[in-house]
Length: 74
Image (tube, rainbow, N blue to C red; front, side, top):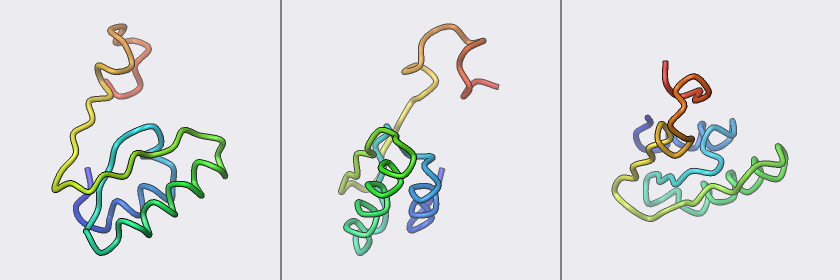
């Protein structure tokens, strides 16, 4: 989880690829650019940058019910 512009660091590292994300309203455009570059560089899915106050992604359930194969369940 990140608050404010910390999501830009996540976007740059590719952690947000294939998920929905948001950031401070002044940085929406910058985040979209960073996400596109990260996806292109790593041949990954595009991040859905949303202009919302908060975004909830539940990767634990989106990756299936087999807990042994899900990297998000520790």
